[in-house]
Amino acid sequence: MDFFHQFIQQLINGVSLGSIYALIALGYTMIYGIIKLINFAHGDIYMVGAYLGFFAITVGNLPILPALLISMAVTACLGMLVEKLAYKPLRHAPRISILITAIGVSFFLEYASMYFVTPTPRTFPNVIENISFNVAGFIINGQQLLIFSITIILMALLTYIVQKTKLGKAMRAASFDTETAQLMGVDSDKVISMTFCIGSALAAAAGVLVGVYYNTIDPLMGIMPGLKAFVAAVLGGIGILPGAVVGGIILGVIEALVSGFISSTFRDAAAFAILILVLLIKPSGLFGKNVNEKV
Image (tube, rainbow, N blue to C red; front, side, top):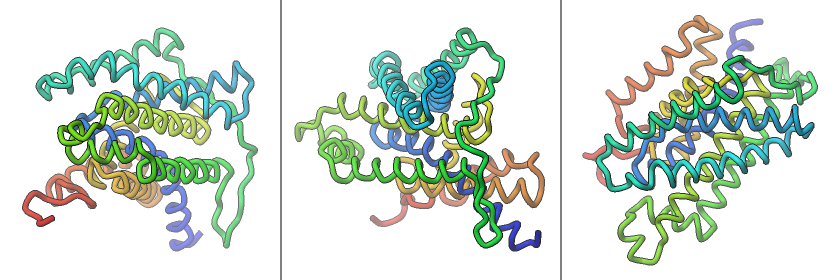
């Protein structure tokens, strides 16, 4: 395979991986946009979603799409529960208190999962036939097509909710100015709960798709993807939905290129090198405005 074909093939692989990062990063950026909280438990919500999809398929004998929907629904409820129990009581507390709580929730979910499902990795069932398509010499497999399709559908649905529905208008108003939105009749508690609900559902979808793509899941699987999705959100401009999508895709493509042309050993280092560069050069991200920029 010549350089050009290998480059394009790695781009395809990178977009697949980046689509998953984008789904997780959307939850980070939605929550930050409204309550300015970096929910470091978000990666573990993604892990719970993967396990729910796994048990829906293996125990419930369900096809992939019903299993995906069940995982998203249950994890959405879990996200709202976490917000009500862990974050809402600290909404007016110092930021460091909420940050420490988020880390605590992350550890709780990880070790509770280890207790209930054991630390042993599970092999995710093969729910997609081993098919591949040769398009002009480039290979796209069934798992990648599933990831592309579901990601596009979910992002289109999220865009519709945010741009066209009453809830979306309330979310945008609360993101712009929470106090003024409350004065105008917006129920901030409901908006925040629904933000956690939607963000958690998207993370669950990413977890199931990762299980399908890599065929293995474990209770600590959310740590690194969660951190990388945070990098993607910062890269695109945290609090900005299109930025989370673009940041996720860019991060996935860079990781794929590093793995394909340098070494897979450095793929994680590349992600965090990007974070350092963004913070040094443009802390507001690709789509954000720096403090000294005019609106």
